[in-house]
Amino acid sequence: MAAESKGMRGRQTVRDMVLSMLAVGFVVWIGYLFLPHDANSDPVHVVEYKAAAASAKRAAPYPLLSPDGLSDKWRATSVSYRSADQSNGKGNAWHLGFVTPSGQYAAVEQSDAPRDSLLADKVAGGKPDGASDVAGRTWDRVQGGKARALTAQTGTGTAVLTGTASYEELAELAQALK
Image (cartoon, rainbow, N blue to C red; front, side, top):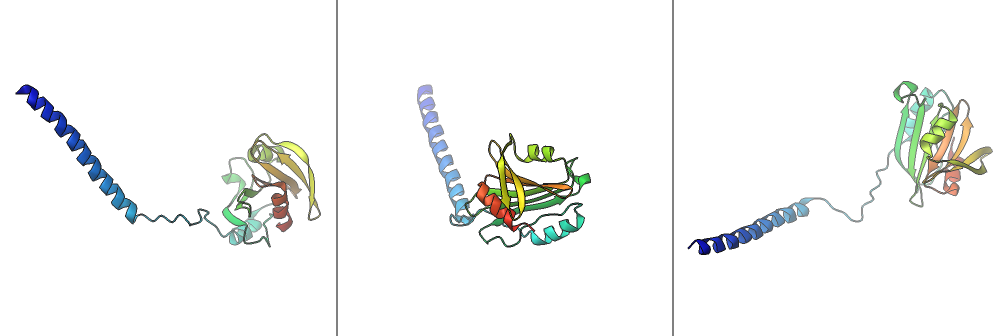
């Protein structure tokens, strides 16, 4: 009798486990039906940056650069301005990030922090890589491990156009800066 009881208990345990898995699977399937999922939607969250740029231009102690005239294929994804007392010793810092037409990342980083410290912060392992003349300004090219940059002095500040975008796309961004 004890042997029969052990055999039944083993079958009941497996049966109970299978029933429990079916119940959990059903709940997950119902949840999936009610959650929004659009495979064709664009995951990029576009932000409006022109008002933030106008405000930052009034606050920045250097001539702040913001693009004007970029095509709609350049999608702004992040924007911020932090005064020196908010940026942990990194000076007055302007940031504007984009997804480029080719799907890469490009950003305008501008600060009155020392140029070398700004470059080290924005382009890890950056090494000089020549120069580019864009819109009447000479931009130093910097190639890092994962990113590249164009950099130039802007009054008392330094502008760094950086990201995974090509030098050509960074030059297109530089061309639009006002």
